[in-house]
Amino acid sequence: MSDALNYLIKARPEAMTAYFTFMKESGKHLDPKTRSLISVITKVHSQTERGLRQYLPRALRDGASPHEILDAILMAFPTLGLAKIVWAIDILLDMDIPEFRVELLDSESAWHELIAWDDVRDNEITYVEGRDGRNVFIYRSGKECRVYDSRCPHQVNDIPHLALSGTRLTCPKHQWTFDVSSGECVAKGSRSLKRFDSKIERGVVLAYW
Image 1 (cartoon, one colour):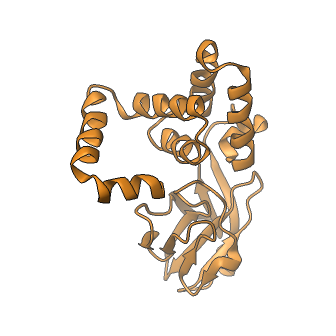
Image 2: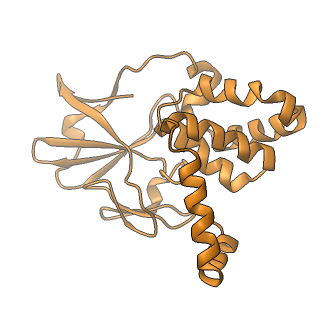
């Protein structure tokens, strides 16, 4: 939420409470994916970069595919105009979300080999660079393995491994902090790291995305 909205909530709580109640009630008959797609369009229309960076990943979390998001933006061309669409795509490209890469748009989910199980130290965090732009953090506890996306759930920017201290990972952009042993957000933010299904097969760690 912006500093301006935070200020208005404190300065005019009665008015802002009514506003947010209206926004919530006006979309209560829509499924989350549809609401998120509409929100993406409104952020493109108003050219609100911060909001677009938040609602693009939210639309993905709510079940929209990259193709559906692109379709929604393009279908709004009569209202948005080409300049705003190009503005939005420039931001999308800057975010570098793997799912939106041209070579990955039509790819199906699959198991990916990450690292030899013997190279993953017990009770420590291991960072692995993926081949398709998807980097991960692996936490091993005995025979258990947990694989987490390196991208912050806030605005999906990639968190570098240098931001890791022990089991705590802090996103340098907005200081969301995560405990990588559990994936939980422990400071600043409200959402956990995305966890991928994983397994050990023939001595190799695999993750599914």
